[in-house]
Amino acid sequence: MSHQSNLIADNIEQYLHEHENKDLLRFITCGSVDDGKSTLIGRLLHDSKMIFEDQLAAITQASKINGTTGDTVDLALLVDGLQSEREQGITIDVAYRFFSTDKRKFIIADTPGHEQYTRNMATGASTASLAIILIDARYGVQTQTRRHSFIADLLGIQHLVIAVNKMDLVGFSEQRFNEIVAEYRAFATNLQAPDIRFVPMSALNGDNVVNRSEQTPWYFTADYQGKTLIELLESVEISRDQNLSDLRLPVQYVNRPNLDFRGYCGTLAAGVLHSGQAIKVLPSGKVSTVARIVTFDGDLATAYPGQAITVTLEDEIDISRGDWIVAAESELPLSNTFKADIVWMQEEALTPGKLYDFKLATRDLSGQVSTIDYQIDVNTLEKHATDSLGLNAIARCDVELTAAIPVDDYRTSPGTGSFIIIDRLTNVTVGAGMIRGAAGEPSVAANATDWAAFEHDLNALVRKHFPHWEANDISKLLTR
Image 1 (spheres, rainbow, N blue to C red):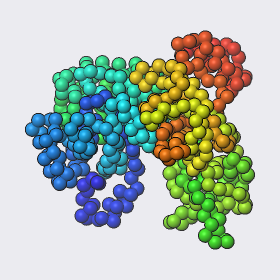
Image 2: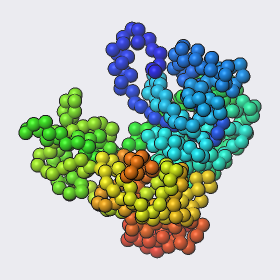
Image 3: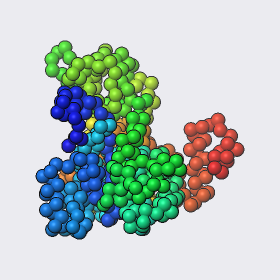
Image 4: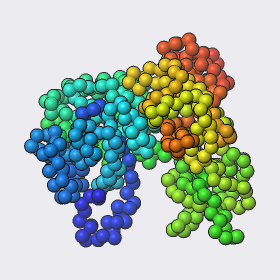
């Protein structure tokens, strides 16, 4: 549903044009059980005037049976649509909602908080640019808070909004808010997310969700420079998150309608592609020049990430589905082995050595997980040895495929640095992975408390990639 605008009645064509050209933000809500994730989304939609009258009437009626907010409407029922969710008052499956404001379009994924639904949370986070992590103001940072923060960071989400919810139950205390901010910042030193914001709110009453609350005047002072949740969502800068430097075009389909046209179709995963640009095809290594960038609406001079395009080349090159078009000067390594973080999504455990089907970008091939380096305890972030992976487990593994492929790091290019694992008998997706580099690279010791191993491995990494560094330079790095 879209926001209300006078242009809808006055000039519908202008409204549709402006709406089409807004940028899109995908975000998730996550956190501990009963922190108010579904209520927050319901409040966000309600206060933004994004709910139809029949929807409001339906949840008003449902609130009398399954509501948890007394005589008031339980807005959580807007996204908790499954009968089992309403009976238990929890989120089980990922629920998606669309809405827009004057400045931006949004797709929300409401993800479950229970540990047994970790795979569902990872699924919702895989396409998100921002995560709203709710914290109950009464309890502060909990195990689920750390777990979901880690998973969001693992999946490369760069923007985190820490929503300190239920502030009404602690008297909108500035001191309590600051305690939680300090507690989370201490934990966040383990994360790589560069942008972390904090907002005090009450999703149940609507404080600081869409409208500024009179209960938190201290938050809107110069010390905090506070913004409501919707103001943060509208203003967060996501355009720089895209990789515009490393060209990645996985070929999805070869378009050959007649003798005079051969085009290579796909969605640009990263980088910027220009007509006349020199390119290289992987894994063959053949080079050529882009002749045309063809789309349904006509030829383009330049294509950007996310655009579905068809590319024609100056030379006749053997290119098929699964090949990559990259910049001619690209030094992307080819390997049939690599390291990856894998989220296991099946009751039957992952056992090293078993043959699976792997889907990487547009390439399908067989392979196996050869070894499990360590499993990550998502509650404590500790790493320990294991011989197999159970449902919802996350581990760093070595993957071995039947053919060499271009190896892209997930944090550099999520579209080409990720893959899914498929059971060969049932055709069920049993796992998802994020590539962390080609196998054989010296890796930092799994147990960071073993300083000697850590120092040894870091020295090996630095000397390999920075051979001109002196020993005292490495010592300075280690002391930081």
